[in-house]
Structure formats: structure tokens, C-alpha cells
Length: 324
Ligand SMILES: NC(=O)c1ccc[n+]([C@@H]2O[C@H](COP(=O)([O-])OP(=O)(O)OC[C@H]3O[C@@H](n4cnc5c(N)ncnc54)[C@H](OP(=O)(O)O)[C@@H]3O)[C@@H](O)[C@H]2O)c1
Image (tube, rainbow, N blue to C red; front, side):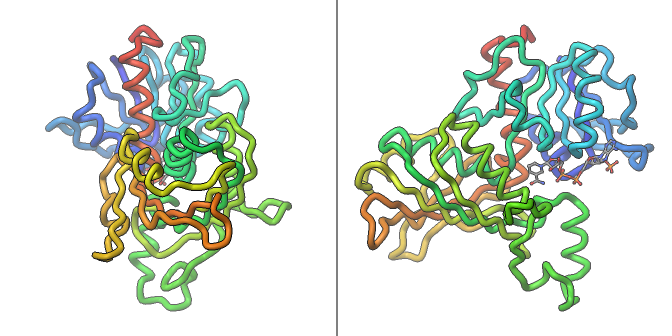
């Protein structure tokens, strides 16, 4: 296969590059693409230094698959050009996610939505991915009526510059993100929600193909990497904690850390570099036996972005969906 990564120099692009080293995809050529700013850069891949080339109309020729790991403006302009060059595109930006023609995929949940005629596949928002992995497992044992989620999101979710800024401002008490929890990720919508919160709500409903009400409060916290979520789910029937533990233990890519006697619950340090979603603090609501509360942690750059995109490509390859 001939594969391109647009945004190869970014946080998600570099994570993908690392994951591709051990991928089952038969890679003959890897084209690393970024902006003009990265002209002259080289990135390590399988023991070699690969040149980064600037994005242009011509970079897609002869590629089979292009991962777009850049901004939504880049995806909007260049994904159609890649498709014109017969490439399949997996886009990590928010630009195409809610387009009804575009499958929005978490492989554990809805890989079957990808058909041979789909030239473009959207990778969901990082906070959405870890949420739907949990909800999809739970919906198998008890129909979901309502979800409430509060996210505690790392600065790496805002890209490479955000990490540099946090590190450089760590002693600047006036900087908003230092020693603070900021309930503001992406722009505000006129509804009073932020766009990040709306992504979690509408993407979750699209992926699970269900319209149960969801509410979300998304908060940026001064953690370098790893998103945490407090999730409350109202079910149609009474919650059985034992069945919840069992379904999580039997689910692909979910790890339970829930041993309160020994103060064990998922922390961002558990998820670094991991493709699994970690859950813990599993408990029933005091006043309503149909409500479950839990804590969920995942690496936003890995399962929340690069690994999910790669899993999509690998499943398509294994199932020969695009004839690669
Ligand atoms: N970070 C996360 O946890 C996460 C999770 C899910 C989804 N996403 C989404 O994934 C995408 C990448 O995020 P990131 O965190 O990796 O961002 P990042 O660290 O800021 O990297 C952005 C990448 O896009 C490239 N780029 C920017 N403008 C470009 C242009 N005009 N032409 C070509 N390349 C351009 C940059 O190239 P240069 O180095 O040359 O500037 C860089 O490689 C975004 O759409 C983001 O919303 C991120």
C-alpha cells in the first residue's frame, strides 16, 4: 500500500507514524505531508529518516490511503482532491463528521457502516470515542435512556502548541490553563454549549444510531495527555453492577480498574500510549436504581485519535473493503 499522512508533524500525526511501524498494513511507501512551515524536516520511520513534503494538489498521486491529521480547513480543501486521485481518506478533523453521507466510525461499534463506495471515513472526536466504547458495551445489557457526561480534557487535545504553552506558562499564575479547570473547549454556540460539547452529543448519537438525550460539559484541565470523563447513564431497567463488570470485562478494548479498597481507579498515567479505554468507580445512583455512574479514562492521542484511525484502516484491509 501507498499511504500518506497529512499533518505528519502534529501530535496525532506523529502518534500515527509510531503506530504504523508495527501495523499489519503492507506499506510500500509512506508519504509524510505537512505545511510549508515543515519544509526540510525529516521524521523517523522504521529506522530511516523520511522527508516531510509540503501539502499541494500534487501530493496525492498514486496513494491508496491518506490519513488527514491536520485542521478542518485542510480537510475541507484537500480531502476532495485526494478522493479525486482515487485515495481513500480517513479524516481526523471535525469537518465531515456529521455529514450524513460520511460514516463516522469507532471500530468496536460500527465498522459495518463502511461500504466499498465510501471514499471518505470520519474519525470521531477524542471524547466521543471513549464514551461510545463504554456506552456500546452497556447498551448490550440494558437499553440506554439518557447520558450525562462531564469531560476533564488534557491540553494535548488542543495540539502541539497547547502543550508547549502549558509547559512554558507553568509558573505564570495569570495564564488561564495553569492550576485551573476551564469549562470552555472550542467556540461557544448560541445554544450556550461549546462546539466540543455539541460534538460529543451529536457524534455519540450518530455512531450509536440512537437518539437518547445526552448532556455534556467539557472542561480543559492542566494535564498534558489523557482525557477523563465522569459518565452517568440512565437505563430503562434497574442497574445490575455485577453484569456491568462482566460486560466490560468481556468487551474488546475495555479495561476495568475498580478496587476502591486499595484506592485503585483509572488515572491518566494508566492510559499513556494504550489503545484501550479504562473504566472504574462503577456505582449505582443513590436515588434512582436505573442510573449508573462511572469514571472513564483514555489516551486522547491514541484511542482518541491515531489508533482509532489506524484500526479503521486495518479492519478495512482485513475485510478487503477497498480491495487493498
Ligand atoms: N490532539 C488530539 O487529542 C486530537 C484528538 C482527536 C482529533 N484531533 C484532531 O486531529 C487533528 C490534528 O490534531 P493535532 O492535535 O495533531 O494538532 P497539531 O499538533 O497542532 O498538528 C497539526 C498538524 O496539521 C498540520 N497543518 C496545519 N495547517 C496545515 C496546512 N495549511 N497545510 C498542511 N498541514 C497543515 C501541521 O503541520 P506543521 O507542523 O507544518 O504546522 C501539523 O502537522 C485536528 O483536526 C484535531 O482537531 C486531535
